[in-house]
Image (cartoon, rainbow, N blue to C red):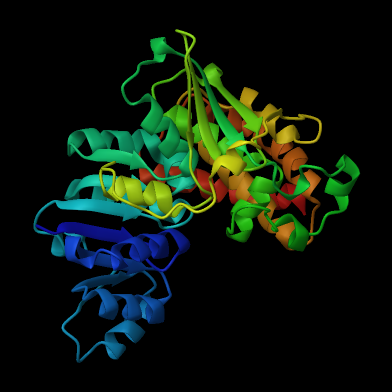
Length: 387
């Protein structure tokens, strides 16, 4: 029997990776739903190629375009006003939630009810809304698999162990384009150079987070929310080659690490095949690459974002939304040449230390609406302070 699949955000990079995998094994998969925000042309192309009967487009304007383009096709076209219960009449085998940004949280929460397994490739949803996601997963008995390479590696290495078994959890960072640069250079680097990651091809926002290592702060926040391990056990090491994605140090003296090529398809591939040993081409890792793996401590003077780990709460609260949205807005200002890369972190520290946000430090999110209210407040305040 074919495995039934839904992809939320099929026109983005993660969605395309997922389709690349399915394209090579169509006999074993049936795509039930594809969704996009605005990219209706790509969505229509995907629906035709994979013979998908249901597509959903969130932007109302492009929904009308899509309806017109497909009026003679036997494809069901849904908008954001439709409920997922109109699409699914049973639980599907696997859903990939790959809608970028905090806007991905609402559809993620909605689709859990209709999914046996959900893979989430969305930092903001996990960081800001894990308390809500966890409740839904439990309520509907849905299995969760993290898709980000570091978190997939932690999940893979620790799923048979408890907090008491583990001494340290190490996430690796390449160091990005600024690894060998001076602090002075960080003050003058242009957005165009900051997004030139040496190993990964990513969007501009995540590339900036990678350049100043803010992405590692977020990854530890994610890991702490998803897994039942103490926050103090997490550590970051610089690993320029990006082959080792996580290292687990156990209390019995053993150390395990997970390596794979610099290719996001690998954790996605293994998640949809349930960790069965299916073949995927792996070209870069060989005896020569294994002979040249380097690890370094993080220079906190060069990467002051790491100091923010002392400020995060030990569980998912609304303070996570404050940090996430303030950083989002500051990265936008950097990309617009309005502040320096160094100022992204210095301004972030000022903003999250404002007295008005302290009340959120211990307050768990109770609804999606509550998270969005905090998002709106932080957006306005961040732009007022920074510009």
